[in-house]
Amino acid sequence: MKVIIFGLSILPLSVFAGEKIDKQIEVPSGGTIFIENQRGDVSITGWDKNELKVSGELDDKAEGFELNTEGNTTQFIVKMPRKLGWGNNGDGSNLTIFMPKQSRLEFEGVNVSVTAEILENGAEVDVVNGEITAGNLIGNIKLTTVNGDVNALNLNGNIQFSTVNGEINDNESSGELRFSAVNGDIKSSSTANDVRLENVNGDIDFKLSSIKNLRINTVNGEAEIHIKELLNGSDVRYESVSGNADFYFPAEVSAKFEIEAHAGGKIVNKITSDKVNKAKYGPSSDLEFNVNGGHADIEMDTISGHISLRKQ
Image 1 (cartoon, helix red, strand yellow):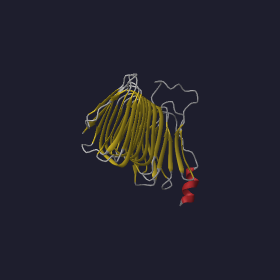
Image 2 (tube, one colour):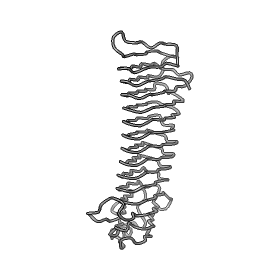
Image 3 (cartoon, rainbow, N blue to C red):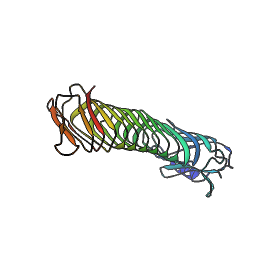
Image 4 (cartoon, rainbow, N blue to C red):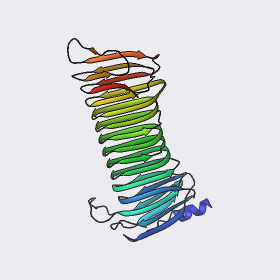
């Protein structure tokens, strides 16, 4: 059966530009599905069949498509002219795709919005201009857009979010999270134990259930971080250039705190009665204290921003 599938799938299938498409082929179980669509809207959903189904309408500038399998990789590529401007010149593809949920997804596009859901073997979605929406994905997950938002719900695994100009909205994720944004807000409500973030211009809103490792590096923007539980031996690091950060810790937090502020920065301590030390010369200040045994290690540093320590 596998030999027959391979023999059939190496023959490319094609249609005329702008035509409707409705194709379905059997694909290897647990393989990789590679999809390339440069413009338009694509919805990808995992199902229990070892089949890839593509339906909808191709880009009106398309020169057909290729659909084939080599080894464990199946690729579906919408073929576009080499010298095509990427502005709003014609309509892009509008596609609905079903793939085996046990297969890994790899997607590439330029001006395209993508929805991917119900996949259990990881996904990598990379677009230039467009929004990415992901739900119920498991495994190694990488969601990258240059200009556009990333929206996620119920992801589990090693997860990377990245955008240059856009927002990241993450809900009910778990595992290890990595956030990267240049101009945009980042919001997450998560049970992940390991969270790392790099942001230049944008606000941060985190609601974290339990933390083992937390790293936040930011330049400008407001940050509000709620941590429901610090696990034993937790390590929290925060560094900023400017902007205000409000950290909310458990009422009975057990941690050693080391906080520094420079060049006009400010520290506010609402957890204990320990006072902030102001430098004898210069505008810097620092705060160190140990509370309830110090089972976690918390270090924070800001150049000219404000850091507030508060209880939930």
